[in-house]
Amino acid sequence: VDQARLRRANNEKLMGIQFATNNVEEGNGAIALAANVGADFCDLNCGCPIFEATRRGLGSSLLRSPKKLGKLVSGLVNNEHNMPITVK
Image (cartoon, rainbow, N blue to C red; front, side, top):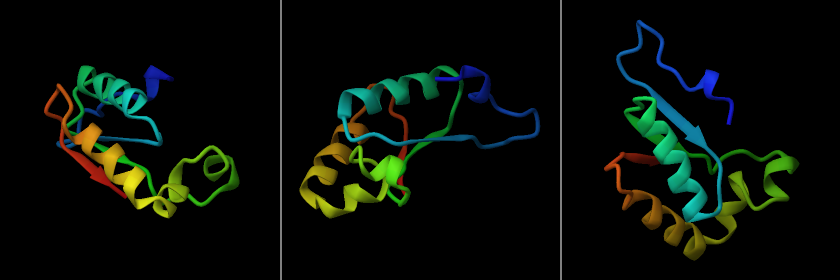
């Protein structure tokens, strides 16, 4: 992860970090990084339609498996940092 991109601008009152994953452990790692840089919330990307993401089971391909997506979101929402999670 390019940590130089994970920073809040001086004029930002609210900062969110968006990530793409299909794995709870990986997602919780991203949440931990976001918490360490002071993010206010994280967003799970479920909208990206590009082949590079969907061929790896990321982005909009998650919408094809609602049960798997539900388990993923549940695992992310119950994170140790109490970080709010949105899904886009």
